[in-house]
Image: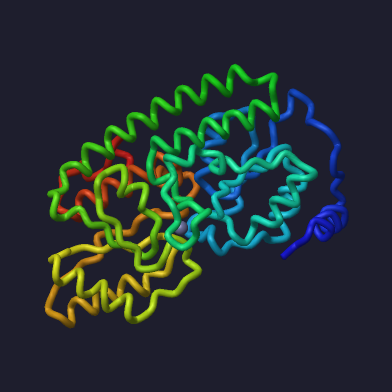
Amino acid sequence: MLTKRMFLAAATACGLALGTGPAMASERLDVVATTGMIADAAREVGGELLEVRALMGPGVDPHSYRQTRSDIVAMARADLVLWHGLYLEAQLEEFLLDLAADRPVVAVAENLPRDVLISHEDYADKHDPHVWMDPELWGLVVLNVRDALIAARPGDEAAFRANAEAYLAQLAELARYTDAVLASVPEESRVLVTAHDAFNYFGAAHDFEVVGIQGISTESEAGLRRIGELVDMLVARDIGAVFVESSVSDRNVRALVEGAAARGHEVVIGGELYSDAMGAPGSYEGTYLGMIDHNATVIASALGGTAPERGMQGLLN
Ligand code: ZN
C-alpha cells in the first residue's frame, strides 16, 4: 500500500509540483476518475471544459484494482480526482483518503441516502456499491459529479448545470427503455445468474431475483459446494440461461453450465454483461448509456422477453 509519504516522493520524483493552485480559467479542468462509469459521467457533465482520464479500462475489476505508477502521476497532476466509494475500490481507498488531504478528491457515491442503498450481507455498516445498475440511482451520482465540478470550477457552474440536466433526461429515457424490455420477460424466468453479485440494484429496480456465484466483492472464491447448490437450483427451477461478466473470469459460470449438462439440463450462456466496467472506449458500449442498454437488451432477449436486436437507439454492436 502506498502511503502519503510515498505518494509525495513519487510525485516529486516525477517532477510534479503539488499545491500549485487552481488552473487558469481558460484551461480545461484536468479530471481523473477511478472507474469508466464515473469518467463517462464527468464527460457528460463537463463536455469540452474537461480533460477526463479513467484509471480503469474495459474488463478491469475495481474490487481488486491497485494504483499503478502512472495512475499516481495522473492523480498528482489532476485538478480533481473522482472515485466511487462504498468500498468499491477496496485496494485504492487508503491511498485516496491520504490524497484527499492535499487535493480535491471526491467519493461520488459515498453520500447517497442510506435508504436507497442495499445493505451488504457480510458487513452491518457497509452497502452494496454497484449503484450504477439502476439508472435512477446513477442520476444521483451524476448530480454529485456535477457538484464536484462546480466546486472545482465555479465559473462554469451554468454549463455544468445545463449539461447535467440534459444528461438526466437521457438517463430517464434509458430507465423507461430498460423497464419496458425487462417487464417483457415472463415472471417465472426473472432470475439472473451471474459471476458475482453486481446486479442487486438491477434486481430491485426490475423485480428480478439475482444470484451471484461469488459475493459482492470478487475477492471471495466460490466454493465447489456453492457451485453444486446453484446447479441444483438451475435444474429444479428450469432456468435456461446464465450470464458471464466482462470484468470477472467466466470459469465459475462455465462450471454451472457443465454441472447442469451433467444432470441432463441444458443451460446456455445468455451473453456477456458489463458489470463493473464498460466496453471499449469510443464504442457505444464504452458509455454508461450503452453499457446499461446492452445489459437490459441481452438479459431480456436471453430470458424470453422481447427487445429490439440493437437496443434502445439501434446502436448496439
Ligand atoms: Zn462488483
